[in-house]
Image (cartoon, rainbow, N blue to C red):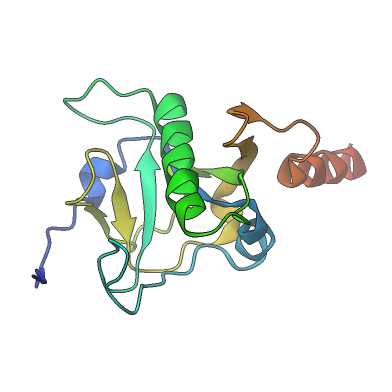
Length: 166
C-alpha cells in the first residue's frame, strides 16, 4: 500500500526553535556535502522495506517539544541502526558515519521544514541547504560505537583557516 501525502503543514516556525539540526550520512558522502551542501534526493522504488518518497533531506533537531530526547545519543543510535540495516544487505558497508551539525540560524528563512511522519524526532526539507550552514562534523564508528579521532576533516579545515586569519 502506498500512502501519498498531498500537503503537509510547514512547521519551520516551530522547528526553528531548535538551535541545531543534525544530519547522519556514511562518511564517504562528507566531501560532497561540504562542497555542495545538502541536496534533496529520493528513492526511486519500493524495495527492502524502503518507502518511495519525493526529494528531501532528513535531519534530527537538537531539541523537541514534549519528548525526552538526548540528541547526541539519538543521532548515534540512528547512525548505528542505519549501519546495521545496510550491513544486512552488504558486508562491505562502511561503519564510519558523519554526524553533521547545522546552525539553524544560518539556514535560509525561505526553507520550509516538515515533521517526518515516520519518525518520532525526524524532520525533512525539500530545498537545498548550503554547506556554509555546517559548523561541526563528527566521524563516528558505528561498529566500535565511538568517535574516530583525527578524522574530523571539517574541524581540521576550520583550524587551518582560523590559523591563517590569526
